[in-house]
Amino acid sequence: MRTVIFIPPLPRMSGGLAVLYQVAERLRELELPVALTSTQTGAPGLEQRREEGFAVLPWAELNLREDDCCLVPEGWPNALAPAFKARARALVYVQNWAYLLSGLPAGVAWQRLPVSFLAVSQPVAWFVEELLGLPLAGTLRPAVDTHTFCPGVKPQDRLRVAWMPRKNKALGEQARQIAEALLFPRPLPVPLEWVELHRMTREEVAAELASCHVFLSTGFPEGLGLPPLEAMACGCLPVGFSGFGGWDYMRQARLYGYVPPFPLRDVPWSGNGFYTPDGDVIGAARCLEEALRLAASKAPALDALLAQGQAAAASYSLEAQRKTVAALWSAFPYSLTPNAQPPS
Image 1: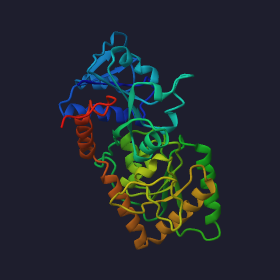
Image 2 (image 1 turned 30 degrees about the vertical axis):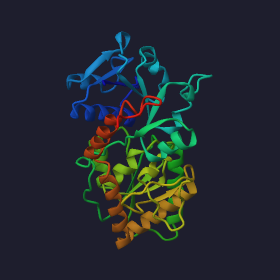
Image 3 (image 1 turned 60 degrees about the horizontal axis):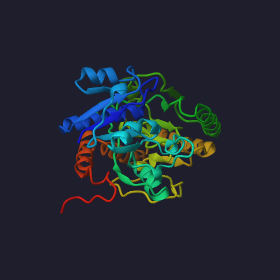
Image 4 (image 1 turned 90 degrees about the vertical axis):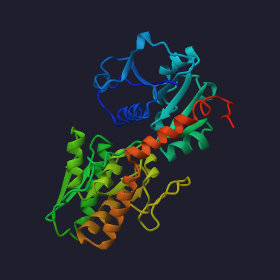
């Protein structure tokens, strides 16, 4: 079975695109047939993969076979048309729960289409399977490059807070203003420095995170949300919004703090950050104040939280992703074909 992965024609590289390329790389490492296609010849990263030896199929000449598997991210349902025409297996990779329904043409329902779904996280799997009742083939998480995203030397003469202005910038700025007001009556013993992670390479982001103490998470909605996880890998304490999908790895460390309205999967780590409901700016500011005071105190409790974050990040390894891909693809085509049963 050949897997043909649709690469959306986005204007620039995104986290979702990077994960699609990760899947292609794992399939090739497992010596499973894989090809890439896009409606745009200049889709971000596509030419680089062609140079790396990946098969890149022209969209206008795409000729799928019945035993192919066409993998398409959730926001591009029209890209499934060649799969339907060829009666190939159609697999929708839900990287963000928020776009699963909004991307459908008017009058079309997923329940009426011959597709199966792959979730990027446990919260997304819950949304797809339990809430919407759609057929789930499995969960395939992103991988974190812990050689690039790893702890570094934290400055002792100041506290550094990293955040991403491109993710709900106004809410982030408001949380910062409120946090600074909360800190005013009892100032921190060292100056506070804000670090904007914007228009940087992966390596530049990793270097900044490695020198920061706290990461303010302002992104939502998210299918998983890699930045807080990468911040954990770099030894930062994350605070703020989960994006919903972040609960795949986020665990509340605040006593009586917010937890999501669905059961979380069992994991070998515990509290690794201070989290609030998405959009709760006041709650995020209070979490930020608490995290900064904890970081300034250098109390043992901080080391314990950071260790739990490191444990969470370590579980999203390339090897873990490779094993998941191997297990999922060995179960195909049975999990992708209605009413089909694997051989006994």
